[in-house]
Length: 132
Image 1 (spheres, rainbow, N blue to C red):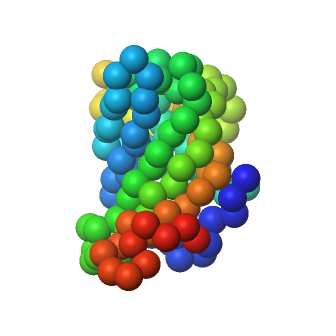
Image 2 (cartoon, rainbow, N blue to C red):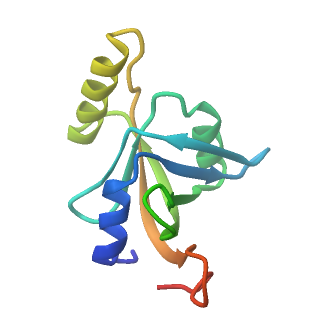
């Protein structure tokens, strides 16, 4: 597992959306707002509307998360392996968030947990595409 730098964690925590890319029978990229950096440095995403994403993760486990740009030019891409879970404290957190936002009409079915393997600079400039 790649440990996330403090500046990467700060950006991930402050960005309103992350973009998740997966590949399988077809490539897929979706924005997500139910997200968190876990205490052990993994990335968690609430599975509310992630059907295609979860199908792709079941195929090969590969996930890319991109975030940044909403408050400046800094951006990162985190590549890793995803695992879908349906119970535990993080799932309970996402269920509560979805229930509050959607007033019980929609809920989180689980969470996609991504173990970071690479962090790539996506900021324009000389370090673009460099691995941290």
